[in-house]
Amino acid sequence: MNDIALADIARNLLDGALWTLGLSLTSFALGGLAGLAVLFARIARHPLPRRLAQGYIEVFQGTPLLMQLFIIFFGGGLIGLEIQPWLAAALGLTLFTSAYLGEIWRGCVEAIPKGQWEASASLAMTPLEQMRHVILPQALRIAIAPTVGFSVQVVKGTAVTSIIGFVELTKTGSMLANATFQPFLVFGLVALGYFALCYPLSAYSRILERKIHGARAH
Image (cartoon, rainbow, N blue to C red; front, side, top):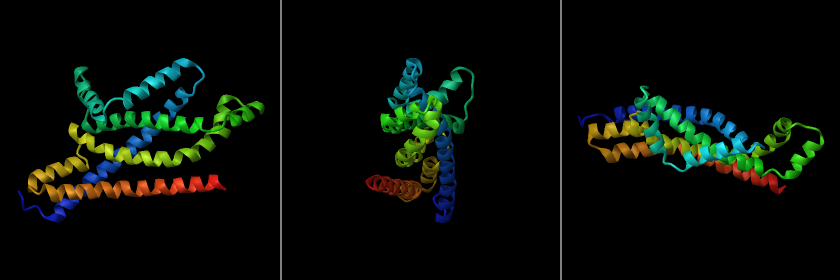
């Protein structure tokens, strides 16, 4: 089984990388929507949603992603649900991503000076209108760089989903290493695959940070 050609290894790893990319995009999109809900709960005037959101964030930031995936994947069986690895991986990463994005975005919203709130309130805007027309457009500029930076963590986090049997880049590499008995070669290519996915995001995040800092300096 160790006569697998390099081209076959590369083709299988590319398939795994596409699954990694698909899982990352799905988790980031759904996690972004859930993170927006977490953000609004965190800055709500009523204490109940604030406390619930705080508890949600502490649970998902305070426990390893691996444990969260285990609970989702194996916990479904305890209540009679058969959860496929793809669904468990997407759900686990979505919850993980939403907790972090919600907190990142809360910090960006709270970075807007209080004078902006007061000025918009003086125009008889409702809290929703204040957020939509005044606060969020400014917070969005601050949030772009850390949000893009966090997306790198989401891509790398997909590697953990191999533990529950989801066949992405790392899982594909493990199977190929067992079949070819060439772990150094295979996992070297796996590392290159993650680098190819993550480096453009990291570089783009740094470019955005420089642009934002440059804009503030003027």
